[in-house]
Structure formats: structure tokens, C-alpha cells
Image 1 (cartoon, rainbow over the protein chains, first blue to last red):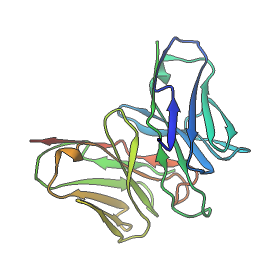
Image 2 (image 1 turned 60 degrees about the horizontal axis):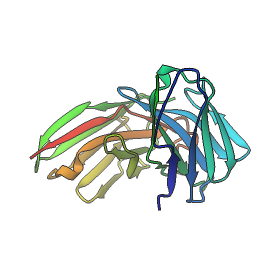
Image 3 (image 1 turned 60 degrees about the vertical axis):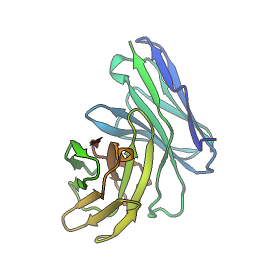
Length: 116
Length: 114
């Protein structure tokens, strides 16, 4: 089984709809991240969480909200979807060792979201 | 935060040839991550470089970190079809380790021609 799973894998929705993307991990990691990938722009950080009570905005948080329901679950919501939120969304996790340690991030398979 | 520029943006290489991808940072590089992505799929971690002058290899892929040049290079020897994909470099947005998330380059699209 995959360590980081995302649901749904593909979603088509309409402008103005509320949508939630979910991420679950079995790696036991404290840190979780949401990124979006757009052609020509690379990956950009939306939100990140160090634990259930610690959630932080990334580069492009406007129009998004997140919820860390448990250590293993981190969901991303679009309250009112708009076409320029069409993108590939990735969830990632990493293991906390120290505040300055280098820890690889493990990525989920991605959710392809299309907003019409 | 850091900005990472990758070059080239795309690369077409004949199978069996060597190639190099570069990642240049706008600020001092304290550490760098290399990932590979197959089109439309998730990112696969390749390697992480933490110190200037560090060099790591995995199978036919070698990466180096040049702190003075604020640059990292990824070199593939004797390329194979399995090497095709998008190569992404990433660095911590504010801290070297990337605890507060990573900044990524825009990626290098690698195509291997038989």
C-alpha cells in the first residue's frame, strides 16, 4: 500500500463549488504539506502543518483552507472554486528530527483538479 | 525566500548519451533536494545534498552541490528510457532543511530517444 494517498485522484467541478481534497499517510510523520503544480510554474506551497495544532500559510494560500484532522490526515479545501485553481495538487509528508535537520519530503500521487 | 532556476528547460538526448541538468539558486544554498516526476504523477526522491562540495550517486545519476556558485548539477551517465521524465530541484524556503516547505525550480523535461 502507498504511504501517502490522495483522494480523489481526478476531479472536475464547476466555478463556485466547494471542494475538498484529502491526504492520508501511514508513515507516522508529523509534518504535512500541500503544493500545487502548474505548467511553467513548478510546484508552489499552499499550506503546511507541523502537527495537529500548528498550521501555516505557504506562498499561495489565498482561496484555500486546510484542516489537520489527525496526525495522519491533512485536507485541503477550496471554498468557492475558480478556473485558475485548475492544477495538479500534491500532498507531502516529512519526518521531524530537529528544527534544522534535512528531511526528504514524500509525495502523494497527486490530484488533478479541473474547475470549469 | 529562494528562487531556483533550472537549465535547460527541456532536453532531448539519444539513448546511451550522458547529460547534465543544472539548478542555480538566487541565494546561498545550504541544501538541495533532487526529485524526478513521471508526467502527471507524483515526485520520487532522488537524493539530498547538504554540504558544499558534496557529491552523491545513485545508480547512474550523480549530483553535486557547489555552494560558492549557488548551484547544483545532476549528471546522468549512459541514459536509458527509464530516465525520461521531469527533474525538479528543491530547496528549503527559509531553512536549509525545508521544514517550512520547499521552493522548487520549474523542472527540466528529459526525453530519451532510442
